[in-house]
Image (cartoon, rainbow, N blue to C red; front, side, top):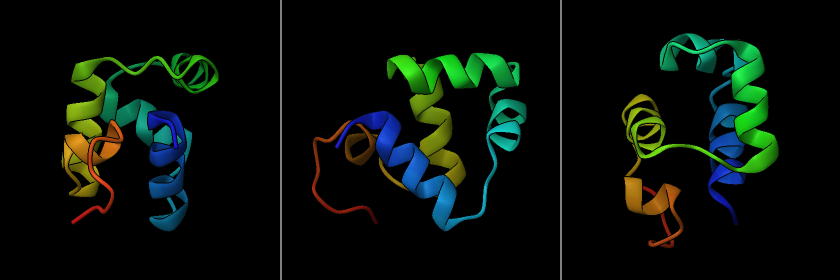
Amino acid sequence: MTTAKRIDSLMRINRFKRADLARELSISPSAVTQKFKGDRFTLRDVCRVADIFDVSVDWLLGREEASK
């Protein structure tokens, strides 16, 4: 599973919209869409998402099997 798919899964589980993620990452909603299309989340993005959803960066990057 890619980082984008893991983030998308967390967003669905937590009823978090892309607009919400854009606000949390301080970027535009269209920039979020581009990140999902290209699976191009920066390390800063991944760290922030890990904090938002209380999961490890390793899990988001596919280095661990299970989240917390």
